[in-house]
Length: 117
Image 1 (cartoon, rainbow, N blue to C red):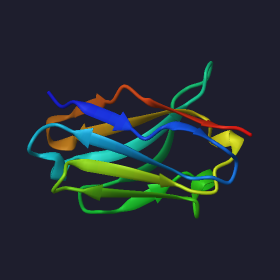
Image 2 (spheres, one colour):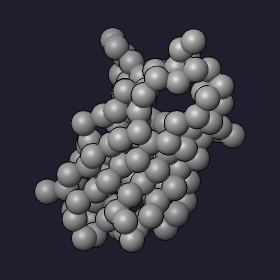
Image 3 (cartoon, helix red, strand yellow):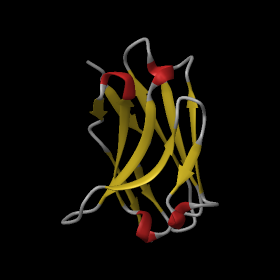
């Protein structure tokens, strides 16, 4: 069983930055596919960014050039650096880990990000 713990959310003004962190338990973090999702009330959870075990990175179009995903396998951590935030970035951000070899998916509990003046 893998546990994911997100941190770093909060209230920020438009144009500001936040750095989200997701810490994973377990010793095989390096082989996980990692992703960040965002969910607003009444809507589905949407993919925001992902990074493979090999370091391949993808972003949803709305965050390209503003968000950066990275991973530190030595610390079992994935980071989402969010810059130039807008109110549309508001939501609960969830970390997801996929152990492709074992066909298992894990979710964190989420961290709230609110962008408002």
